[in-house]
Image (cartoon, rainbow, N blue to C red):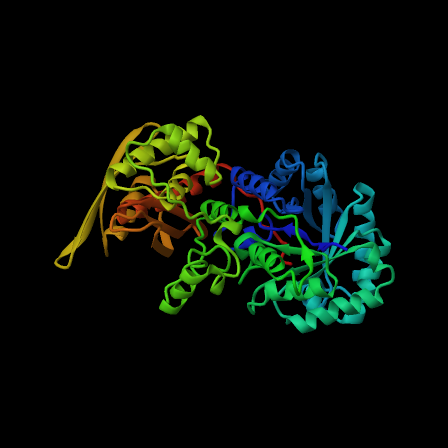
Length: 515
């Protein structure tokens, strides 16, 4: 008998987007959804339609465009939520209504002010209504791992009788540990009558760093769907990382005889796509997709690798899409060669995108002797943006030193012309940000600033990630250049342009889902 299939339910666009600084506009959500479809996830949870008009529009657009995966929409067990979710999903090829209610006494008492009996009735009515709209209904018991186990049996029995096809057991606050979670899944499988008619799902948060481990323990105990996010983004410490769960199941088939349908060679590209969209850099030592995941510095490790790669690598970088290419492009390379290399890296650029990328490439090749894959990724991820550029950088100059105040001169272009401002600051980066604020009329508060080299050598491209708060709302930005000040102002402008884009499409309300 072959390995049993584990469904991968991706909630990057719903739970992941609730991570501070990770909000996405419609175009960005569609871009990420297309990548998730290419990755061949089984389910894309596209949003929480009742939360805002933007969430509704995103779910509707993804449902229309992504035809292969199941498209899920989250909703509370409230008629208006369920009906709104179905309205957004109605054109999906494979729709799923995903409804939830808290079941722990902590949540019932302090958040919902409901009795257990009232909760059971809400579940029965909500799932029954959802079932009249679509055949595929998932029910989640929020804060399941802090709920009374016998009450959970009642909860899932009611949901199953009302027509739920997927029963989700979330570790909402990342509280459980693998052995305990395994026992809970076994308990439910034994005590809930007819539970084999449904798929058991798990949704783990990473507050104690155990999200992936808990998910795998649940799979071994009988769960057949794992809810996760790319790069592990999500509320607080995040969710189970999709790439970690998938590769653990792939590498350890000896102890976990299961398989997924994920195209593992697209994991790195998917991770980079999300980092580009959100401006949230992947930590260097992140499992599977971090830039150090396949780096070996210690002498004994290097010696082992030279002898045989399996001494210190349990999987190859190529298996997750990290290419080690010897092809180096230079200033004399043409558009065709550039387009071909981008295609090999997983980016099929249209003519407009290629023209823009080629301009950035030729500018970079004047500054560097050799252009590496990492440089090309920085070009495509920084330059091919789907955010309308209200402000474009024309020139930046900055001076600084131990005996002088840092000053900056910045020229920005808009649809109506160009404008120049000067400013002083604690350093050159602070000064250019102050000059941009004068030009845009915004006042940003820098929350995070990170820089790293994306390629090798003294002329390496530097990538800058910023998190900036404008009127209490966080926005991420990303920029790349061989000059760190230039990269910094590009990253800041990326965040500024997101502000203006967001203000043209205001959000009526924030998501209430906190599974």
